[in-house]
Amino acid sequence: MDFRKVYADGFRVSSPFFAAFCLRLPEPGRSRIGLTVPRALGNAVVRNRIKRRMREAVRKQLHSLEPQWQIVLNPRRASLAGPMPSLEQEVGKLFSRCKGS
Image (tube, rainbow, N blue to C red; front, top):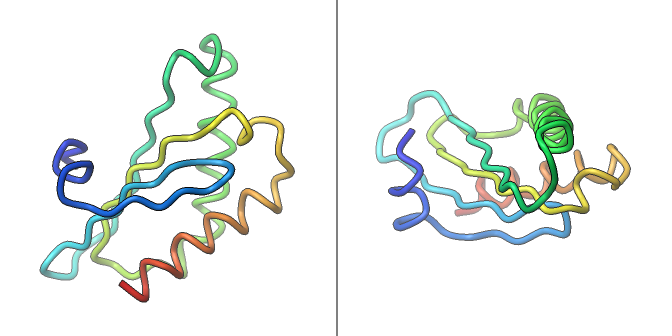
C-alpha cells in the first residue's frame, strides 16, 4: 500500500480514537488497512499495545468493509485507554462511512 497516495488522494475521517485516511480503488480487490503510530504517543511498548488494540478492533469489524478500500489509521492517545467496545464501534462507523462514499 502506498501511504502517501492514500494521504494525498483520499478523504479524512476523524474520531476520538484515531484519524483515518480512506481511498477507494477503481477496481474491487482486497481491502488493505495500514497503521502509523508516532513516537509522540509513547515508547515502543505503548505503541505496540496501541497497534494490537487497533488491529483487534479492525479484525472484528473487517467483515463490514467493502473490498476496494485502502485505509491508513493514525491512532490517538485515547485509543490506548479507551474501552475496547467503543474503539470497535468507532472502527465500525468508519467502515460504514466508507460504504456510503
